[in-house]
Length: 169
Image (cartoon, rainbow, N blue to C red):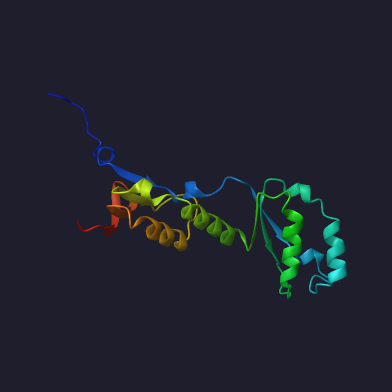
């Protein structure tokens, strides 16, 4: 008689997708426009352009940069474009928004790059718990991406899942 224990979860063939693993590893830094405004409220084009020339843009080398303004100023679109133009030779990527919004955008981009056909006829569990906050839009995106190909989608952990979708064969 064998005393071996069978791990039913491991033997089930369920594929777990941890959305947090799709987040880029690059450091994220935020670039606040506020200090480059006249009285931290008004954008004067000549002064703004001059202040951007004083920034050591190489300090953003290989970093993900988020542009935002922490004051309630009206910022013309071209101002953001100037900042991106200066950052482009150095930054790994540039986005507009706060950290939460940027991480969400990055995650959606990485989900869009997944080859859904790699999961054809698979039983998928999208991990639902973790230390990293994952917004609702990522769960929507992964479901929309994989549903046409997979056998089933579940939410949670392989040992305790909530059924989301099951293909009717």
